Amino acid sequence: MPLIGYARVSTEDQTPLPQSEALQTAGCVEIFEEHASGGNRARPVLARLLERISKGDTLVVVRIDRLARSLSHLLEVIERLEAKGAFFRSIQDPIDTGSPQGKFTLQVLGAAAEFERALIRERTKAGLASARTKGRVGGNPGLRAKDPAALRKVRLARQDGYMEHLNETAQDWVPHVRRLRPDLAWEDVVRIINGPLPEARRWTQSRLLRAVKAYVGDGFLPAEVLARAGRRETDDRLPAIVAGIKGADPDITLQAICTR
Image (cartoon, rainbow, N blue to C red; front, side, top):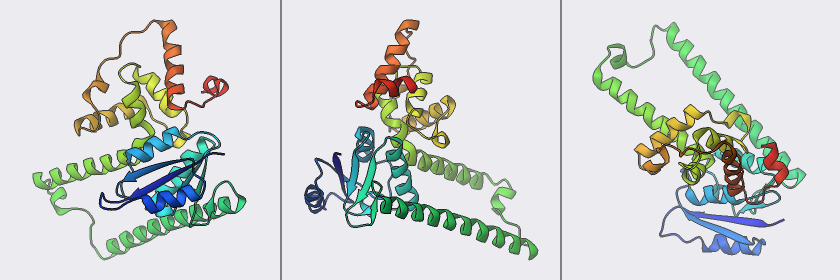
């Protein structure tokens, strides 16, 4: 099973060489190096790696924090790998999803993350209930008064939150949109994007179009992706869809394409 390494450093002043040497010693046949902040989930090299990796491959890092800075991001990446039939291994941490021990460790981490989220929800509810009993009303006074400046701040905050959410999922859809549009219609692009994703993370055409417009507006995608798709003959659509699926996963089998 091919081992594919990922080495990341935060700044251009740092060098990924020590990580790359450790990954080579571990037997990695290919190593992807990236200069990017660990807090940024929309890393182009990582996105390219996750798109390139195929069934039976193992993604290897020196330490978990080289891949993800949060447990939720780590679990998200591993979920993507499992959907492709690939594995994850950290050299300095007890995680190897190709072994029973590593899978058990991953299950413990997932349970701990869910427990932490439940505690936060309960503490928030208790805090709000306590405040109400003391006569304090939550919320922004400016919003209650419909102050224009306060309303503008809320709109900007919501937009920032929306863009942050898009950045977390960009590796799922940005490479496909950049590669397939405007050659394919949006309904076909959505079908190709959703193919390898679990049900909870699948896109609708309207959601995807909104996300693409936001990325075009901020300059993350070229405006050409929003151009009208050319008209195709009915008999021509199926080969185009198959070509799109094959381009996203060169190692995919014909049976898997038929299933999708």
